[in-house]
Image 1 (cartoon, rainbow, N blue to C red):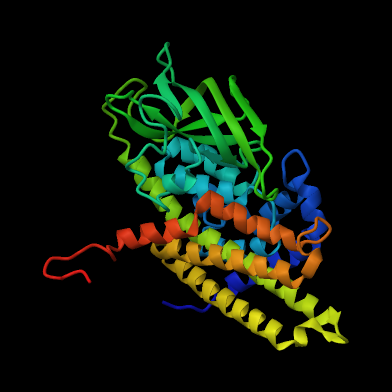
Image 2 (cartoon, rainbow, N blue to C red):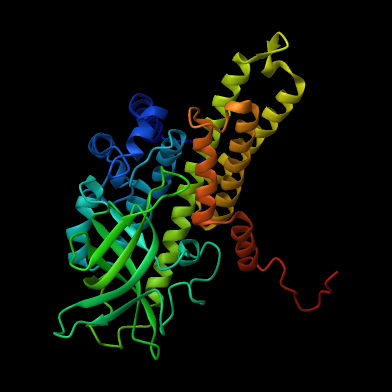
Length: 405
């Protein structure tokens, strides 16, 4: 393993930090999240055109930059520093890898170029508040009722009466960037109860019967929507048999692709959380240097120095874990757990060290705390990330010939 960054990676980080420093300050973030889309479309197009940000990990044959998911993770560390509200996570980290893995050649050729160019955004719709389970981060996605089951609930898929395509019916209450995405990837059950299998379907934003409503969320920089599908026409992602044909596999390929996407996305999320934690710490250090109490800077007190030193060690350890996960996505869940915990602790300490102004709307410290809480709700919680990683590693599984103490 070569832990050193390449010149291209350093240039991407430098350019991205420069652009976001000019265009994505706290006031700009608050203004962007109040727009109908929930992000600054002009800034999104600038990042797409100048840096190819949404297409960093897309192959060049589809109009992407042709880099690796590790490069996307490094870029997301910078977007995390700025708390950038954008469809980058939903589009580039969740949907694009699924289309690249499962899509037919025609689907990849039609969808990946506009996704890489930033002219098309996408969102992954998973029934119920079970995104972490669907991505195999907190549990096995091959078992359990996370997608609604074949009897009822979730989203049900059936062949159209005329035999042309599929129809979807159901509701998804939490879809990251679902209100503004031009394309939805919907996880739905096909085959009924007898041969239930989870498949992914493509739904366009203008499909008849599709109802989307933006929800009020704890973290406005992570907008979510409620998606209702009322006999919506959909296209099956991949080639798993014709509509109504039960012989197109058991859906294991879809579950495996979701799990692989979860591993990569967890590394990206870990890097993003580390960026946010590092910036929250840097802002707090600047504040305690300026704020005076009893005739001296607050940061000169030994107790404050100790707290800041502990946070620095946490952030550096989480950053090392995130970088390792970017190189080896198999460790993504553990890196994500450490990064989310670090962000939560750092943001909480930042509020404490800012005193009474820390959790007021007029100050920006609360934005980092809300990002920490919202991310843990979406992709955690931390203890479940670690518990499932321990189960997969069989850390607590008794072995023959050994006596448990």
